[in-house]
Length: 128
Image 1 (spheres, one colour):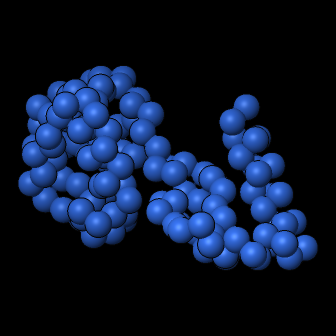
Image 2 (cartoon, rainbow, N blue to C red):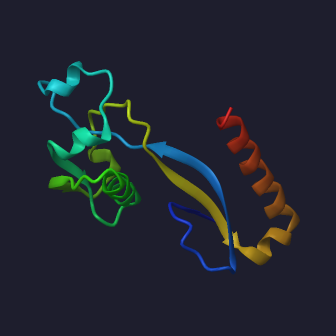
């Protein structure tokens, strides 16, 4: 079993959505967005950004979302760890999917099936 942020797997593997994490935006305490209850994806194209490194799932997802909105973010600084994010603004519901995956043939094992049933049940609860 593995926890992944992508389903770029070949047909030998089975993957099920486990959860989706919120993406956050770093801001200074004196930034005008502090007074905003939420921000829009279009806002991200107007400000220089500090972001996760380009290989992170968070960064890749943000780039997909901004590209689909026709925005090219201006990345000034990259963080290689999630812990670098200290201040966050929420409002734009951007989530990074996280999958539980295993070789497809493992889904026939009783213990793996039981675990995957729990993952499915947790996903159903979080979608309510």
